[in-house]
Image (cartoon, rainbow, N blue to C red; front, side):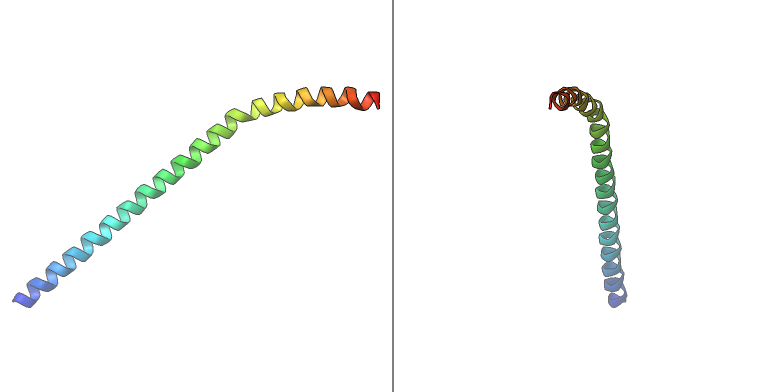
Length: 68
């Protein structure tokens, strides 16, 4: 009877530990996707600035090449 109880306790501890590890992994995955989403939004917000910068340099380069 005592051996059965010890086996059940060990099995319970193993199941709880495995469950906690799975939950930690699930949380890390959600955080990673949130980080990816933040970077995608940041990149989306920066694209118009980059386009305007390139347009400014393009006009300057056009004038430069015409002079050359």
